[in-house]
Length: 204
Image (cartoon, rainbow, N blue to C red):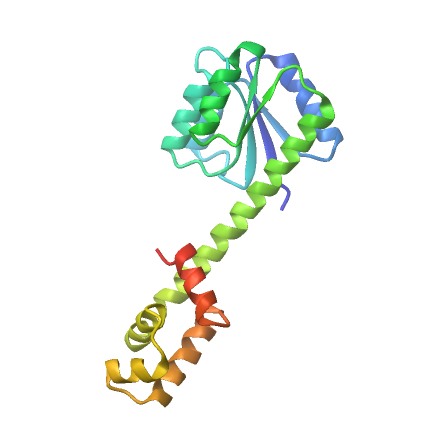
């Protein structure tokens, strides 16, 4: 998987130069003339929500970068967004980062600095995608537990030992051990501690 970098900027020369720079460093790039064009492609489904990074100019007409970002958030956009800002826009960019943007870059920037930040964002996108896949698989395994396994799982998460679980559920400790082993295998965990950790991450 090689995440695409989407460049949204209303300055054609700037975005063409940036796309060339990224392509020359082996980072696939796609350019958009403004926020509305990018949003329309997303809504139409012509641009899939594949793992990617978005470089978004903060000052565009008619739809500003901040307005575009707000609409993306409302759509549930999960991928890293880096704002491209002029000198007077740093305050707005900092506010955007507090609202969930990944980072911002102040124009003019050094090529190597920009490429390094974009690559870091791409790695973050890949980690997010892997985490989403893990979460889906864990929740699917969780849904596949039997009613009795769910009961044993609840007892394990409460910190109870096999003997206590057996008493609470009216079964033998050996049966508890059998269910515990099945739960660990289905959820792909090695210990109760790891189980509690993954439930905290993915179980809701």
